[in-house]
Length: 266
Image (tube, rainbow, N blue to C red; front, side, top):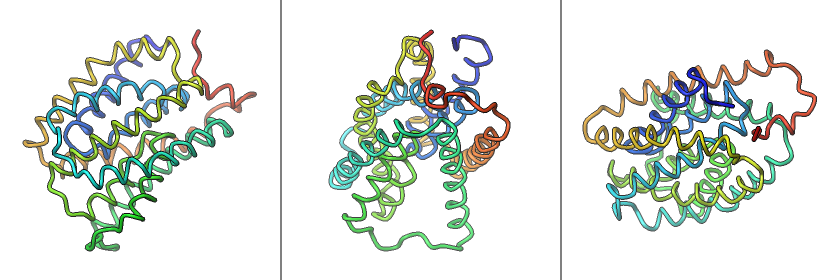
C-alpha cells in the first residue's frame, strides 16, 4: 500500500530527522515526523507507522545515555504520563481523522509560537524549578499529546528545563521517559488497530533509517549547534502545521471518518 518511491523518500527523510532529534536533541522535534506523514496519509496510519520506529530509536539511544538521566524527574514524568495516555486512547476512539489533523497542526504551530515568545522575551522562561505536583500534570499532558501525535516533548521540556539540567542530563532524561511512554502507548495502539501488516512491514523498511538518525543525533549532540538544528525544526513545524490545517479545506468530505482514521491492512 505504501511502498512507492515518493512515499518511502518522504518517510525515510522524516524518520532520519526524528532519529536525529531523539538521539541528540531531547526528542522535542521528533513529532515532526508523524506530522509530516499525516500530510500525505491518514493520521492514524502516520502515528501507527512511527511508534515502533520511535521505540527502536529509544532503544538505540539508551546505551550512550545510560544512567545519565535525572531519576526523580524521570519517574515524575513517567507516572504522570499514564493517565494522559489513557485519556488519549479514549479520545482517539471517539473522534474523526480531521480532528486529529487539526489538533496535530495546532500543536505544531503552538509549539513554535511558544518558542518564539520566549526568544523575543515576551514571556520569561521559568527561573525557579517547577514543583513536582505540576511536573505530574505536565507529564499527563505529555502522555496525552504523545499518544495522539508523538508530541510529548514540549510539555516534558517545560518541566525538565526548569530544573536547570546539563545538556546531557536533559537528553538522557527524555530518552528514558519516552522509552517508557512509547511502550505504554503500544498496548492501546494495538487494540485500536493502528498496527497492521502493512505498517509493520514498512517499519522494517524504515528501521535502518531510524538507527541512522539516532547515530547521527548522538554524534551531533556534541558537535552541531542546537540553535541551527532547532531553527530548521521550527520552520519545518510551521509549514507542516499550516499544511495539516489547510488539508481540512482541501480534502473530500469522508462518508465514514471513523473508518478513514484506521489504517488499511489491504
